[in-house]
Amino acid sequence: MSTFKAPKGTYDLIPPDSATFLAVREAIAAPLRNSGYGYIETPGFENVELFARGVGESTDIVTKEMYAFETKGGDKLALRPEGTASVLRAALEANLHKAGNLPVKLWYSGSYYRYERPQKGRYRHFSQVGAEAIGAEDPALDAELIILADQAYRSLGLSNFRILLNSLGDKECRPVYRTALQDFLRGLDLDEDTLRRAEINPLRVLDDKRESVQKQLGEAPLLRDYLCDACKAYHEEVRELITAAGVAFEDDPKLVRGLDYYTRTTFEFVHDGLGSQSAVGGGGRYDGLSEMIGGPALPSVGWALGVDRTVLALEAEGVELELPATTSVFAVPLGEEARRVLFAKVTELRKNGIAADFSYGGKGLKGAMKNANRSGARYTIVAGERDLAEGVVQLKDMESGEQTAVGVNEIVAELEARLG
Image (cartoon, rainbow, N blue to C red; front, side, top):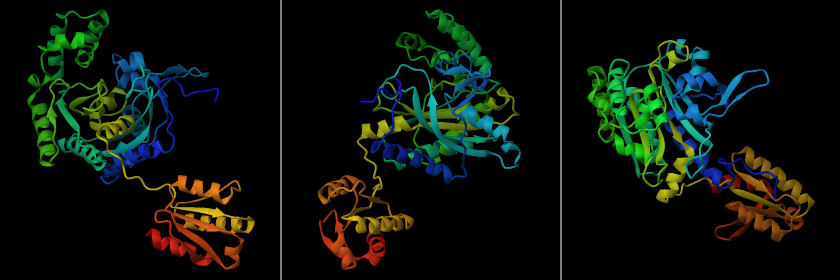
């Protein structure tokens, strides 16, 4: 036993389970790469003010969940709790918005950190794949991202997820709603922290998961009743485009994402097989975030999908992904000469794109064949002194058990032909 364990609320990705996580990441990224999104990678930590300004000082993420620390040099940093603010910061710093091709379309994959009470589907270290389209205000862009996420989930074989959709208005109509909501909340029986939150950002109260709070919100005013004509028209076009693409969704007038920067379109992907942690991803439009962090006006939209929760959703539906074999060919040498020859053949197979492994450690035939079985290889190459004296190796089909002699110099071509 090791002296050390993974920190509370975190997990290690190890084979064979890690292969599923990699496949999920690839499936989510594939539609993005096919739609003009380029890959971006940002540091695991940023200036703490980036998140305080962008995510919102009144959010649980900033007030309770962010891992913030001060460096030896006095810099105040935070482990990134989400991806959008970091990606937008990087795009602005690199002046990608000045290249003349808006929107700037980016996708990313990485680990994020929040200090939360650990439970299934909610970790202190978690993995997401995200996408951001920066610098364009267009309902088609909002619809595109929702459609691409739906496409990614369906490519994995998921079917029991729902898309919730709402509009949070803009700087013209949301202040009127904000005032009406605050007036309503002041009349409820809420604790001091919640009342304080209501004064800073009342929409956060709608996102409160406590039953004691939700019970009192039944008659709360709805933002859709306060939308200006421009926001109504924008939202209706998003709805029409998604519908025309054959993507089903549900209007949820109470949907509020947990970050302050969202405007207009907001959406969430939920899976009913995951219990209380039902959200597997979500996102929306954030037209004012660039200005919040010191950049120019750059209307933008994006989403992040949880890899961890997507894997849990696959398990809930009983979906098993068809994963490529990690090893197609396993070489078993018997003797030093065979060790030298087969190691060279394994190297050649790898150069030709065939996944191959080797029996290390000088094991005997019985132990080496056990390793071959465990590797999942379709074929095993076995060779001893007598085989090499005849210029052949023994090629065993691990499915049928059939074994044939193949010339040493023909084995690579033979395996290429058999494996396609």
